Image (cartoon, rainbow, N blue to C red; front, side, top):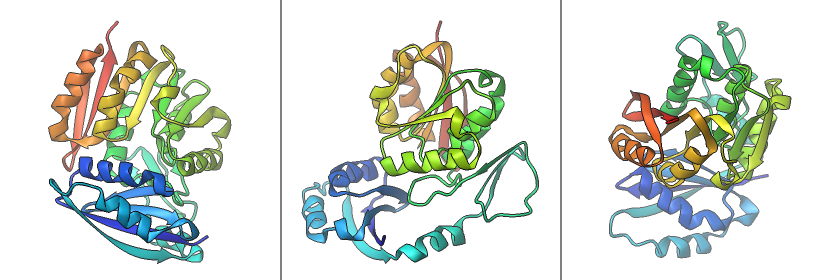
Length: 284
């Protein structure tokens, strides 16, 4: 299948503007999104793409705060794997966790190794927020073993696979609103021999079960985390942890304030290149 890559240049670029554009074009059939500042890149099968429809939707976005320009690129099916393979280098986090593709050979051994094939789904492990959360998970290893874990917004499934490899309770739940991501996460779980330890679901935070989890991981973005904080809190058992990322350092204060309103207290935080992760604990 051939895909159209729509590169939407957002000027000035901010995550919340990218989220607004994503929401506006979400009904046009796009299967996956990738943010590469100052671009939001959206992918759609060629036969489903209509540039007039895209132009109409974009024309309805008020340009009071930012402007959007778009360019198109055809990605032939036979070149897609070569495209991500050529740019996908192994990732090693704190010398303890390696994220690689199946074609990477002869790498030094680490305690955890995750092999993924991202295809059209988000998540190769290179983003700072993924590294931050993996670091937080490894620091909280004793809080994961035999505990019920949810990976909210799982993408390619890296974090839920790591939780399964860290011997979290069966099953680890992985949820994503993108059906392409859900399929990719399932395939990657099987590739890492933890397919029987992970249950992957397509949907949003409404799927979170009350009082079910000892750990919820939410690597999404600031606005969704703020909106769903009450649901995350409801889904945690007393004393459970919520690891959040997908936002900048300057967003920490509002994230912590919203968490506090729902019975969550900050226990740790970390930053990398302006990106942040904050871990909360549900107050007994």
